[in-house]
Amino acid sequence: MSSNNAAGLGILEAGGGTEEIQAKDNKFVHPWEDLHNLGKNKRHVLTRAEGIYVYDSDGKRYIDGPAGMWCVNVGYGRSEIADAVAKQLTEMPYDSPWSFANIPAAQLADRLTAYTPGDLNYVFFTTAGSLSVDSALRFVMFYNTILGRPEKRHIISRQDAYHGSTYLSASCGGKERDKVFQVFEKDFIHHLPSPNPYRRPEGMTVEAFCDAKVADLENKILELGAENVAVFIAEPILASAGVIVPPPGYQKKTLEVCRRHDVLYISDEVVTAFGRCGEIFASESVFDIVPDIIATAKGISSGYLPLGAVFISDRLIEEARSAGTPQSVFANGFTYSGHPASCAAGLATLDILEREKIPEHVREIAPYFQERWQELRDIPLVGDVRGAGLMACVECEIDPEGEDSLKLDYEVGTRIDEHCQELGLILRPSINMCIVSPPCTITCEQIDEMVRILRTGIEKTMEDLRREGRFSG
Ligand SMILES: Cc1ncc(COP(=O)(O)O)c(C=O)c1O
Image (cartoon, rainbow, N blue to C red):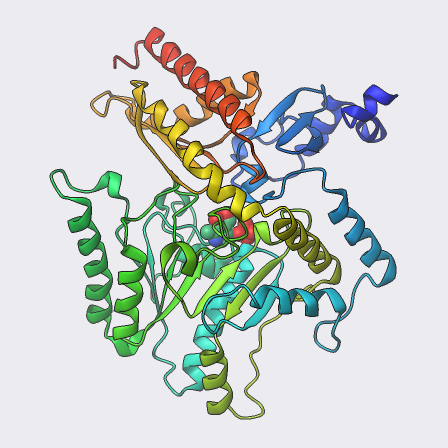
């Protein structure tokens, strides 16, 4: 019994054995589901987690390389978060955010706005990053309409961006492969070329590339007419696209362009906030920008319960307030805006981040983490290794002349992930890339273990490809 509990199997037995759970799980259409596999999937069933590790129903232990989905920043097994949530659910599980205030939401609003840069002193709670981005964009539309300039509604985003899965946030997404089978908004959403220095034209310096990407923004604003452009939305680091770190100074220079043309700036910090880059918010402390709006989620509650938050500047709120009438309400909100249990999880997460000085820990350990990752460059299959804070990506380079290079591109990240899982490391594979963003509590020894497994996983994949005659490097 005790060993069952150790692997979380007690819970599994109550719901059926592993195979039964896997069969039932085939009714669950998971994110980015390949419908061909529906009914045939055999996903590992995770039953327990502690620190940076998760355990499957066979008791096998894995390092959780992506911290769930970039979110479990304070690590697993934090009973104080569970206790805070349980206490809140027992005392007062829900209140209508339309009519009432609740204690955790009020306290969280107060504590988080003490960390926001500049005058971003208002917060709108959501339950996900997509909804934070969606609400931020809709607030911008509301703001311009109320100021009497509804035509100022065009949104500028970038190729390679990921901003979420509502219709509006997904339309801002810039991953072409995600857009092939759906119809998205194109009339008022525009995508600049990706600011990926790895893909810059041959012979161009990083500085010149930066200037070119900043010029792309200014040229697009001029082309559309600044009077028509509402906002530029940008992740400081393009996380899902493979931890693309724009050239130094890019964030500041793009903000200056926006300021010159009266275009608002939304910093999508759904991934970069709450410790991931060594700060609670990265916009000002790491990237030297004070945007108009910051969208967050994920690490805000360390993934223990769904929660998101949009931080809006005093200036925008004041301008909208003075231009509006008593009827001009910001008609946007959710049944679960400021949900008391989610906000209790947010408060307990913030307690841990502060008490254990987790952002400071990330600042100390990130250089070691990045250094160790860079060592993977010597593997012939590896084309680029990049990262920042506690995020990193290995991008593989298959012979571009090879006839099935595109197909291989699709496979290679998954193949590496499969090898690594056998060896006890979960990655986030994406096309030809492997991404990690481990819990921010990770130690040097655990980083060593991760890099050792990843090296073996990549080398095994490379050997397989050579054996198949598909890689000659
Ligand atoms: C930068 C960014 N914005 C928004 C989102 C959407 O967040 P969610 O999946 O919580 O809706 C994500 C999710 O990965 C993200 O990486």
